[in-house]
Length: 313
Image (tube, rainbow, N blue to C red; front, side):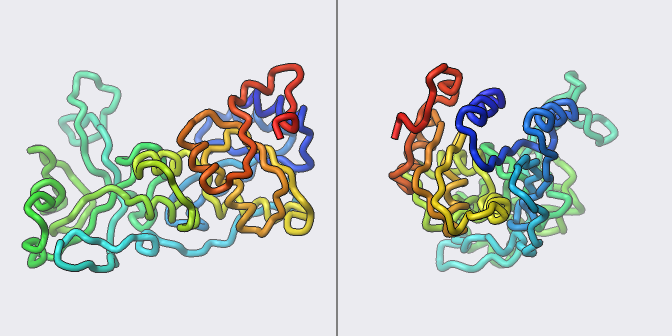
């Protein structure tokens, strides 16, 4: 996939380029990408502009890009109104970010994930910083919420929710499927749930006006594969002429067009936007919001000798 990016960059010859990848990659891969692109990566954590920890590396020849200003956005700032009680709604003011993850725990109570003789069990783990979520991914259980519930409010919950979603934490322990596990939560009752679609959009700083012509589940997958819009807008804001000159853009592996959202945020004049993408749901979301996008299909087409995105316009 990176090879496709290099080929497209060589053939398209953009004035400015931007490439993103995971910060957790190996040193060897990071150095190879740096060598091929000829610029050092800029590490940026989306936590500076959103309520999620998303550590990424950005390679670009756009001059003067530094760290975005910390906007101080916390989990409580992106929570949607909670409707768990059935008779009315309330605004969530407290919740803890956590995840559901499979672990192997030895007799000393320590993680021993590579010991295949141990049972692989699902448990809840509260984030080190519970005011920020984990990196949004395509797996919903990577990001969950533990919402404190007053004991006198339990009766307001529907029996089904009380049975399936409410947990009693005592002395730093929680019972899940009949097994007791340690957990970093104060004693009390907690409603545990997944993030809503709107909360996921807010984590990726996607405008609430963005339309998803797909199910909420598929929409969350698209968001997990996307960019944090405000990080990209920060980087692109340093591009000379971004707000004054007509732009032609080639977006490799475009997804739901978070790059286009960032350009819109800046008020850029995009006269032509080409996208390589094969996921039909991502394409549907892009075209629902940006019907003028020129979809090029499979990125591997860049390897064809006569490849030219402008021929598709």
